[in-house]
Image: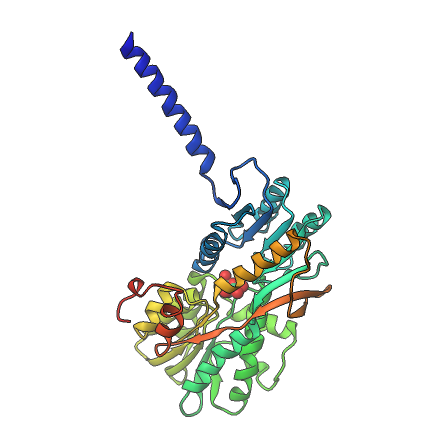
Length: 376
Ligand code: GAL
């Protein structure tokens, strides 16, 4: 009798434990307050994808910032899909959010999701990437994306020796408004150096056709992006680099310069150029200070990255959300024209990192631990 009672009570305890486990596990992460599935969430956070280290950085920094917050939050990923993004926003609206912090997968397509939020009286904060051609965006927190592109290009200019240095251009996804801001900044620095013969364009007939034009229209940039976009996908970047090097003659090899839009694509492109015997040396840009790229920089396989301190972006976004929840008007430093309205914005500066200052900017600042790298 006693043995059977023990067995039954064990099964009951096991079942209770199992249901608890199931209740906690899904592709979101909720922080602060009482959390859990059914309960109200004050601030909903939607990020583009978990498949890129950049956004996993942001998730971790949000969690760090919210660890002992009294406000309930939930972070959802859109996995590179605008449909999933809309579903995520609806999930959060059903949980009663008052503020939505969202970095769109596709700046234009995200309009529908934020318009639904607006209809529910939710305040919308665009995060890092702008949502375009809708008035359903209240605030925007971001880094100076034009300065990112200008810094990447300036690094290539500073390292260039002689004339006719082959210049390989790569860009971000055209669905991402930032990709145009990065390229605008890069072109503003590179174009005069193409016009004066320091660089010769190696992989884009559209850019070649526009080389005497200091300022490009969005359409003109779209044409160039159409040829050199990586869609933020390292595999696509790798394939494009292989195609470009296969097509390149000896005059486009030797010592070259490469504009790579972010770290993930930069490592993929660098690996291709490093295996081409006719490439004597390459200087390549990057962005996001991903751990793997910091190691590449220490090892001399990537030349630089543009560090965007995500801790600041998270602090600004959550600061705005808490002001809004407290009925206050958030502080902003300027506006961005999103094609429909002037969106009130708060912008943070960026930092160039290379072998010389990697320890100061990323270890001494507490962003990463020295133990995460070799050869520092
Ligand atoms: C951009 C973002 C970058 C970059 C990229 C790829 O919008 O500003 O930091 O990583 O997306 O996701």
